[in-house]
Length: 477
Image (cartoon, rainbow, N blue to C red):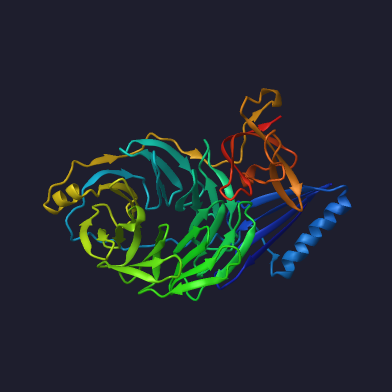
């Protein structure tokens, strides 16, 4: 019997929904593919006892989508919508040059940055993610399907949020899909805390999903263009055009709201405070407990990034005129210097160095020690190293999994199993010594019902409620 295909689309003129839903019935198998129009989407496959039940299940799914406004369409007639990216008309700074130790050219404007104990990460609009040692040596390169919005760390897991609506786990040899955001959301920023993902969007909304990528709650703020989200155990801090709002972790209820001078364009957090950079050139320092303003820092142009030293003793900011600033905690401006490589889309401070990713695609390492800054203000600069990675090949994101025979499981390896549970595919540990009732956070696009996998490492989440897979994954035969 030939396969029967039904293809539907929902594309709203207002600019929100722009997605497809395809159902293929082949004998007793129903394959459903869905996602943003113009992209490959995600696929789910189910097998039924007979063809009649397969057809009935497919018709039910199609009916649900039609009632929500989907309609038959011809695949390929509608084009993919452009993704919103932050655009800066970056001009050269009039300030003296900052003491840049090294500068890496990633090849495209870069938003994503994370500076860890051993490596620096940078992700750009082409989907390139590079890792570098702290002396600037390139140590690796990943290839993601779309532009990188941001790179975030959750304990020792590293994730990259991309313009294709997915969040990729970069902890193994190849990138794997960890989360799939609703395909009608135009993502602006992401953050993760103990597996709980917060997503802020173009419309000013905030959406929270758990470690299994299951929806928890969403809220619509009083503003739009939500460029800030910072997740914490007590909730989420959401910055948008009207200020910063704190929502409670479990309920999503508003806890406090703080108005800002200008729209929030970037956010940072420390254990007791959150920081919000705005379009009017201010960085606001707010108490996490109640939103009270502790200090305010004045820049000379719109603030597109900010960061602090541990505890907030020093506050750093980058404006859209290619300058970076440093302030004392009380608001005193200590210095302003030019980057020499465009405006800083994002930044992070570590060990007296300020790392920035910029409009020209650079990851730059600035010596922020008092001695180096004083010398730079006198016109004395270190010899800068310019680094490229032309010979590094991209390790592409993939759903392919290496296979190994079950008898070859090494000592210390952990075996997990993928099972169908209430219409969702879940993963549980079956090796001895683990709680088999707990779910495992596991890549979304490699799950196959009934399959068993060998995992290098399994760790208990900080909350203790689930396990997290880390390292290499192989399928057992």
